[in-house]
Length: 319
View 1 (tube, rainbow, N blue to C red):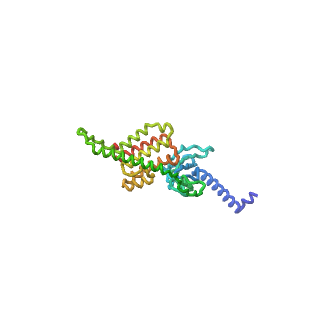
View 2 (cartoon, rainbow, N blue to C red):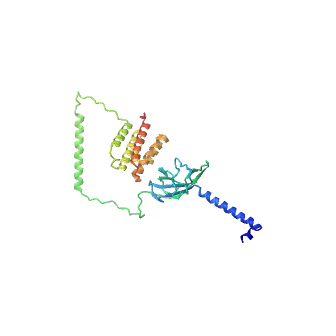
View 3 (cartoon, helix red, strand yellow):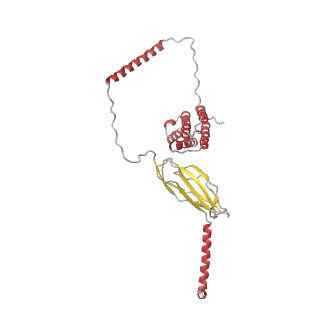
C-alpha cells in the first residue's frame, strides 16, 4: 500500500506531509520556550483604602531576564508596596519562574479597572518583548454603609422634664456668680499698683519646627512600637505633622481631611513638591488609621525619618 502511494504524485505529497509535520513540531518546541505571564488578584470587592494583593508570575526559559519595572503604573489604584522574588527553577525542570507581589489600594469609589501591566523580558540573543496582563475589575465601596440598605425613620426631639424651681435656682446662682466676678474686677481696678513691681518680659514664642522636632523625639523614645501599638504611633505622628502645618503655614490641618489639607496648602501657594510631600505622608498615616494597614516596625521608624525631613526642609532648619 505504501509503495503504491509513493509512486508518481503520491511520493511528492508524502514528502510535503513529512516536511509540514517537522515544521509543526519545531513550532511547538519554540512556543514551549516562549515566556508567559500570569496575574492573580486576591479579591474583587474592597472598601476604600483596603489593601489588594496582586501576584505576577512569569514563566520563561533559562537564560532569559525579566526586567521588572521600577514603578508599576496601576492608576486609578496606588501601589502601597512591591516585592520581587528570586527566580526559581520549575518543578519539571522546564524553565524558571519569576514572581512579583504588589499591594495596591484605591481611594476612589465605583467599579474600577486595574489596568494591564507590561513586563519586558530579554532573550539571550538580546531581543526584548513585552508581556502584558489582562485588565482586572475591582469594586470599591465606601466605609461605614448600612449593609441592610434600609432607610431609618427620623426620630423626633427628646422631651425634657420641666422643673421651674430648678431653673430658677440655676438663674439665681448665675446672678450671684456674675456679681462676684464683677465685684472682684471692680476691686482689682481700684487697687493701687505697688511701686516696686517691675514688668517681667514675656519669653518669645518658640518656633513651630522646634516644637515639632521635640514632639517627634518624644514619640521616638516611647515604647509604642515595642508594645505593638502601631495605630497609636501613626495617629500621634500624623497629629504632630498636622499641628506643624497649622502653625507654620496657617492651614487648619487638625480639623481637615488629608485632601482638604492639600487643597489648603495649594491655596497658600506652597508649591507642588511641598504639598505633595505632605499629602503622601498624611495618606500613609491614614492607611494605618482608617484602612487597618499594619506596617512593620522598620517601616514605622522610616516614617519618623520622613517626618523630620519634612519639618527641617520646610522650616529652613535643615543643615
